[in-house]
Length: 266
Image (cartoon, rainbow, N blue to C red):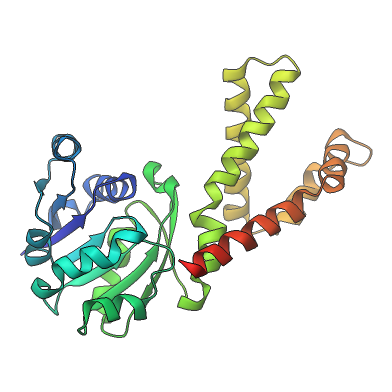
């Protein structure tokens, strides 16, 4: 019997997960249903991914073995209040919002539900994301392995202690925005040097993607990889010195501290 996967809220992250599942070798094992307030967007999602849809969140809660809460953080309490009376204790709730701790979610449901706290990021839209996960004590090993398999269809999956979630929000959940700014700044500088803008974005983005791949695949420290590019008396070390002079590291560290602090207050 196939597992029923329900999505309450069908924004970009939910669609990234649906797309990952649909393109995977486990898609035949999972039936998907999604709800949202916008029927037009729901119909588009149905047509694109060939899933079931509904405007009734309770229908999702009643029919689904695994329920992804894909709504904004400020909507969580309202949605949970709406569905908690029809949730089976065998169903698994998957959260995807900063600041929503396992204890807060358990308190909202007012009963012992199974919960997986997650923090995916937007590169999941192109199957290149990373997702932090932390289960509560009611999820068993087989259930956790199934959840990892589902999340692994669109991202890397890393199990962490819940106390580290605010740091994960800063280092992966929000960090694509910092990287996009970095790519944009590099492209702007290349345009100043006369490179056409479309070419500038390609060179900058590909260089960032390739550099990240080197970190993941070589296992070398980022500092060691940086040193490999910095020839004595060369161009790169001049650029690195300028970045250090203008406080690149400190700016990134302070931005991430601010991000993590904000996540902890949500």
